[in-house]
Length: 266
Ligand code: ADP
Image (tube, rainbow, N blue to C red; front, side, top):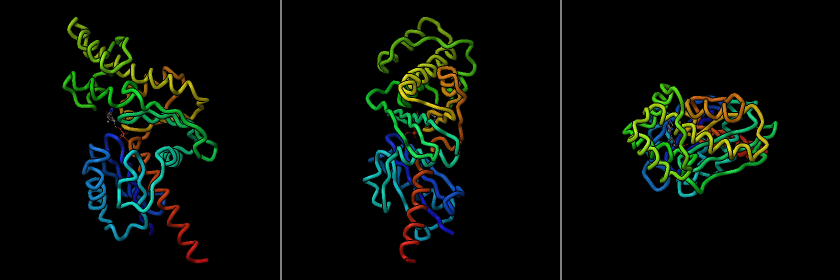
């Protein structure tokens, strides 16, 4: 058996995946807190103890994400774009476009038929169209991030949010509530706003089906539904969405192990 670990240290969360023989997922872990916090190490210790795999049984650890270069436990690092492509291709072999919405950025990655990254565009300048926008809005309603989806699905219509800037949109939402707008309708508007912003990024690329969503925001079904409407395609989604980068890193760790073993046999 070959056990490998992939760790994705993002701006907001740290995620781990342990793989057996490059394909079977033995365990996952996630902690809020990304680079510069104790979450990467906690995520690694948790996935090791939950799977019962001790660190010395791991053939390789590969780190990805924003904080990958500062994680000294990993033998090597890979870019987030490559790891997302690898992870998504593993779960959805027919995926051609990945829409990854994380805590502080959104990326659109187009893949070749072989599942390699062909090109990408990214928004990392503005909180609108990222998880940060949803975090700020959830705070207004004193809801958890998971509850936004449930509320959005109760809506009869999506109230339009005119401001694209998160700070102005926050004031706009507060004044909508003050004027008696229905809470669910406002939350549906918030989900629509995130989808609309990111869809504009997707349209700048030559996106093709299958289209898949990854990253934490993909867990919100109202954002996924709004994205499907915006782009006129159906969106592939896996409960592993937030782990795609860590999964890709664990697959790279497996590939690296095989390569090293082949080289040492030559
Ligand atoms: P990063 O890799 O940049 O740290 P992630 O892909 O882990 O980001 O996503 C983190 C973001 O996902 C957070 O900003 C949070 O708002 C969002 N998120 C997490 N769970 C949910 C959920 N159930 N619905 C919507 N957004 C979510």
